[in-house]
Length: 117
Length: 115
Image 1 (cartoon, each protein chain N blue to C red):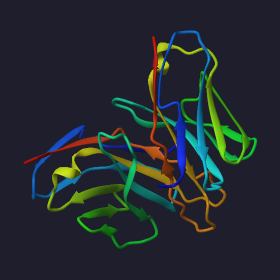
Image 2 (spheres, rainbow over the protein chains, first blue to last red):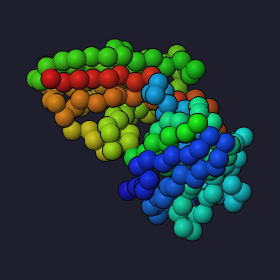
Image 3 (spheres, chains in turn green, orange):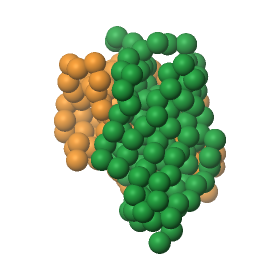
Image 4 (tube, chains in turn blue, red):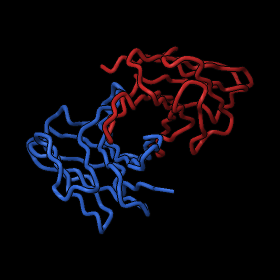
């Protein structure tokens, strides 16, 4: 079974600074997807960024980028120019890419990000 | 929004009573999921469905049952609620397209308190 580990229960960053959230995972599969979800106080789960394991290039979405190290099974999220609206819980998630699979996600326990003005 | 709703949004019940949570989608997605979210545990999969009347267990399925009689509705039932089932429950959907990757969309969540 796959597992996802987020070793930082809480992180804080100053507004306009850069912060990196860590995520490691364990799998025996070679093809899979990785995700970062954001959960603000409203509880809504919002997809921030995703990475296909077969792609070597790191995904980027505006101020959000990832550092995907497949051999190390590491998938960190970098938030640049942090804004007050980035304050939220962030979850790392794994999904198998097996054909005919259920598309179900395995989540880490989350990192609570505080942005200080 | 992906057209996914959950009802009720909040519920307080007593130990031993049955509870049913409803997830409704308007998007015709194939897959539907129920997760629970607890502090320190992230989201954990309870049950999922890969089609009408086709369901399977997730990692924390004990004490829960599900049913899907129509594409748009996925019901989660707690036959006899316990305090350990106090949680926030999320429904999610995916699988609309034929692409290898399909984004999973989440409902707004249901906060359930079992006294």
